[in-house]
Image (cartoon, rainbow, N blue to C red; front, side):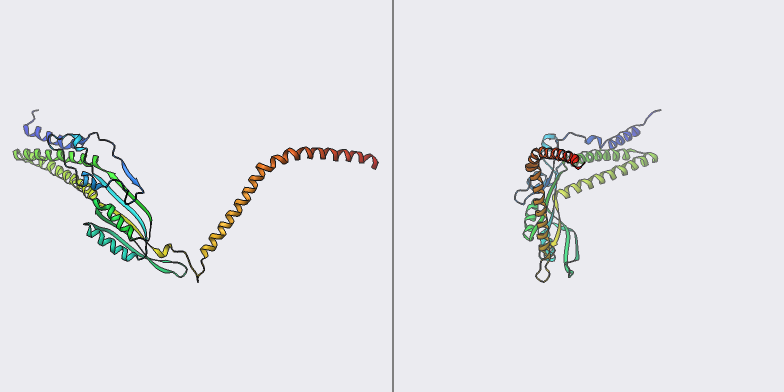
Length: 307
């Protein structure tokens, strides 16, 4: 059975599109994750300091893989838990800061809680903002300046260069397949051939849009860092006070006295077991057996007199 040139070309285009993912496989150096407690001044090298502040471009003609590997795409985010005097004012200040830097508020949740025996109302807030990755440390410093206390701070970085490069290669293969399918469709004369090529062309274009969406997600996530905040009112962290009386102080003192008493008792037992008990065993056991023998002899000598 003879194959027409159109069928052969269609098979080639289908094969190229199907292998788009496999063609992207390449070896890359390990890309570590950066996570942990970081200070604002001594944070890990910022995303903005690397050429990866924008999406790494596809390899240009004649460009080697080694040259491409120098460009990194890193997603950096931060999480903070802060104590503030006025949560509402801090939320407004952080919102203005993010927008002033060219970022925006992703989410904001404020709610009322009660605290203490008299059910004192207190407002808390959780919010997430995005700021340019190049100004992440600056934004964190400004947020910390608004806080009475920083309960926790975490900055994490994820290197997605390998995934992004893989998507670039898949996109290039799919776009090549799309052009080939368009050429085949232009030359097709039979209705069934046109429909077959058209269906494959639609599928290929869908895959192209999916990959472009994934690449845009990586680019946007790397360009704008997310800062997630837990904003706690200062009143919640203040000690309980009832008419000038601080019950938590009394309870704390009682617990400390209990612990000290148990510690003293335990120390005494340990000292007795190590320092005194061996001496008592060495001296006491012989005395015990001597006394017992004398008592038995005395008992035996007393028995005949009774008779």
